Amino acid sequence: MQRVATIATEAAVSLARRRTPRPFPALTRGLRASHPCADFHFDTHQFVQRLEREGLNRAQAEGIMAAMAEVIDESIRNMTSNMVTKADQEKVDPPCHHYTQQVDFAQLKSELQLTEKNELAMVKAENDRLVTDIEKLKQRLREEITRTQAGVRLDLNLEKGRVREESSKQELKMKEVDTRIEQEIANLRTSIQGSKATTLQYLVGFVTGCSALLMAYLRFRV
Image (cartoon, rainbow, N blue to C red; front, top):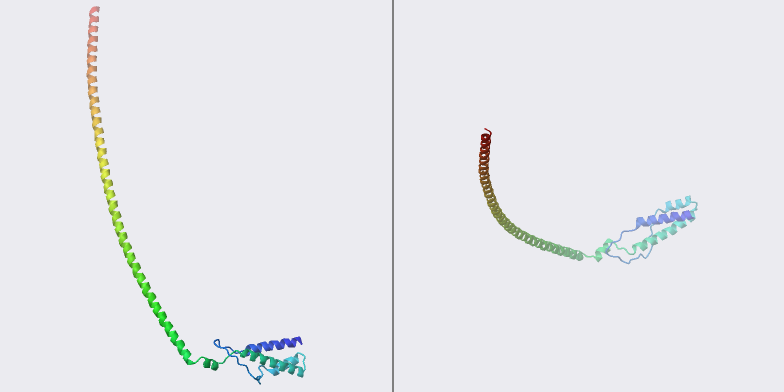
């Protein structure tokens, strides 16, 4: 019996999945059928044969089949009670509502286009302002570069003048040193010449004295 119940449950679930209609998402209606459907929603003959193969007799199989048919029919009625057909959907949603939706869509589209134009205008204005600011910055940068170059040139000229002045001072100092050296050399030469003259005088006197002494000595010897 457990095997039979499993088969019946599987058949009911499979049939419910196949026969479940798709609902309209917009609206639901509370309509219920007042009488059960006369047609069966599955192959009763095949179901009875399957139950007989599982060990049930003909009467038991037909009884289970009838009970399953009633349960399935009731389940389908319960599932379709909250659903509407396409005709009901069209009755509830008349063409004027569709026209209103189209008008709203057109208005929304125009608003979006207007917003896009305004945003483009704002972006263009902002871009123009940025371009103007960049040009001003470029002009200011050029002026700063010009002033900096002028200042650098002035500093270079001043430095060159200072270097020339230092060079002139160094040249004057070198000339003074050269003059002093020449004077010292001249003084040394004068001193050397005076020393030579004095030395010659001493030598001449010494030689003369020695000669006189030698002649006197020779005279006494003779």
